[in-house]
Length: 160
Ligand code: ZN
Ligand code: ZN
Image 1: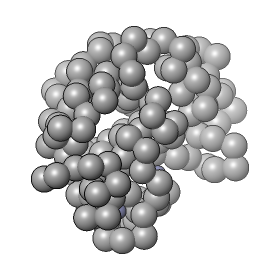
Image 2 (image 1 turned 90 degrees about the horizontal axis):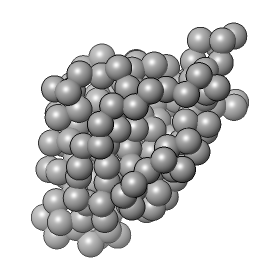
Image 3 (image 1 turned 180 degrees about the horizontal axis):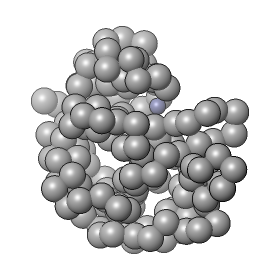
Image 4 (image 1 turned 90 degrees about the vertical axis):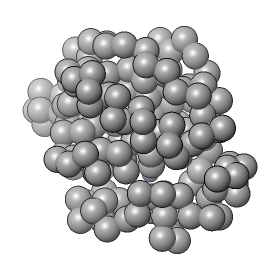
């Protein structure tokens, strides 16, 4: 599967770190490309909440992407209906958006990127010791491991 990374207001070094984490985790399953910088569409901005609407951004990304799947990494906070904030939102086999707004360390950014791309390759949430554990709180994101469990690896035919 091909995955193209787009980004908004994020340094290229930061994007490279995320790319490397994805290559490391999904070797042989996902081919990662850097697509370039994109401007955030103003219609996705929620002035009252000072956040961006994740569903709108994801829909926008899916209409603009050139390759099979895409990941859009942004520096602004994301929200969705019924949640105060989210780290990311994904659509199986199509794409995902990820916000690093609340992810203050390299480790957290890598984990959440690997998690969202896990959804892109078709994985649901997982209750094992696994990066696919659901987390919408920072401490949960801290606690979960960097890597996929054996069960998730099998599901996507990852051999390493
Ligand atoms: Zn998830
Ligand atoms: Zn798992």
